[in-house]
Image (cartoon, rainbow, N blue to C red; front, top):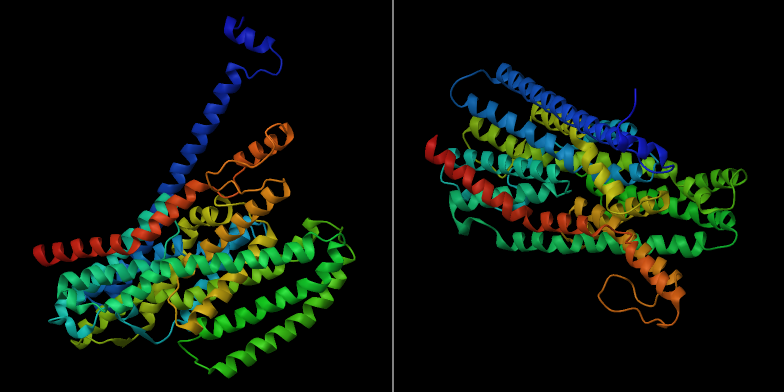
Length: 509
């Protein structure tokens, strides 16, 4: 059987891609796309199954009819919001560890799911604020039905927006999403005078404060590691001196972070106690890590990759601790409005703070883990791999920056977003890499602006170096536009959605 002339010519040309090769490649791409579509349908099915289980649980707990139906609907919406928090926000805690290969995707999902749920269940707190960030006063609502539907609209709008952001691959702040939802529903239900605009101004300021602080601190630590360890001739000797100090700083920072943020709902020590805990963590970690680093250095080669391996265990611990703190804090974004609705229905009163029923907390904790397992990998890949390339040293700087930035901001009373901090830190280490790379190549100006290179036009070698650097952007610009754009419109988008949902509900229900 003879082949067609075109295929005979393809086979006769060595090294040339044949028509058969091209067809096989297209078939492989179609197969991969088909698997992705199939997986998305399966995940959707599991997500709907979880919401069905929540409906059955709430129905069994409360019964049908009257105001109990409102609680059932609110429970489903709260579970949906919790799933979206898990799908989007949790990626910031484990993304750098996955991108640096310190953790596999499966390992990161399991660690994050366990510690997110643990943080929510252990330290989620018995009392939560019903109005996120005190944006709207409960006294502004005319009666409980207005308040209930406003909270329902806020919760649903925030969930829809985070869902959309996850679909386009943009890590956004779930806190800002619920803030926007409360703002839009509050204004529609009670008017502009009901909003505390000073609080809103502080939240708007966090759009700039969070990523800038995170990026600067991460870049400073990366620069320190490069100049004190990686650029040294004897890298292992420098690592034995400085890595224990850096890991001890991380231990101290996370100790303070967990006490100030992760455990704040069940324990509130004073500043001296927090400082003492951080100092004790620093000393204990330094003594432990110094001995282990000295032993490990005896079997390692004197190169950068070997130094990076020393940060593997600290990175895994950081991912677990960040997940615990995140679960304890952000579960309120899912169950705070739900708890407010349950309290308003059962007690007939609108309160600024309410007791959090255990079943409400459980829905938030389990929902975050379910959303993470089903849809978390997409945003994890964006944060850990697609913005810039992360090795273990850079990922360590991102994790360390996240904890330190939250401590600094909390001490100064600045409102910050953990999402913005983590992503800003990733951008910070990426842009520092660009700057140092261009400097090492002998290029006088970084390829971020539009200025022309100040090189000898007759130096062909210099121009080639410049052209190479221009092509090698170490931070992918298209992700900057997508993420920053999503950040800027999170509050307005959630607010408009909440306003539309509230108006529709009050009109037709």
